[in-house]
Amino acid sequence: MKKWEVDWIKRGRQKQAIFRVIQNPMTPAEILGRSREINSKITFGDVTNIVRMGEKKGIVICLTPERLTGRIYFLTKYGRSLVNDTYGLKIRRERAGIDWGKYADIAAGKTRRHVLLALDHAGIQHKTGLTLAQIRRRVNSKYPTSLSQMQSSVRPLARNGLVTMTGFTKKRSLKQYELTDEGMAMSGYLREISQ
Image (cartoon, rainbow, N blue to C red):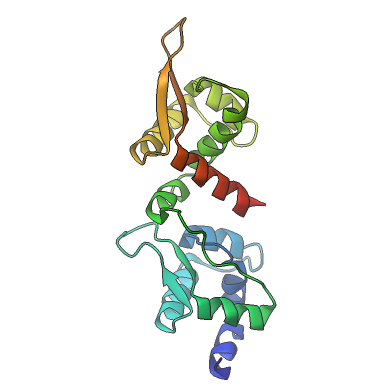
């Protein structure tokens, strides 16, 4: 480990905040949100500049380089050891088996994350899927939303193969949805990182 790199990530409150919060693969918006809990004056420009400099120094890696927006960043093996030695944070490597492009689509909308987690919790209790209204009721307790937001959140989740339509209700023929195996793995990952 080079002393100048330790000095580089220690220098400046913005860098300190950013490198303390990148404990999981994250979008710049997620990094910004978490970093503001440590330093309220940090800006989106600070995050993007520091992450890019970290990439050039081999500390940060982009897990979704093909995306133009909503890229996912994480610390390299060297970056994790550097942060561990500097801040005493034990950071595990990124979880295997996660499609980071699909994760980026979920991270792009808070409602998508809530829908996925609501369906995950519901799968334990229901043998059939849930309608959009039932999903909305589960989500509204934590994140107030409309039925149209539910609809526009389920579409990309279904397109990515995380949610599937299981059938229709008997009375009014409303669509019912449940998680696919990949959706269950993704929601498990979301639960793991939110603890």
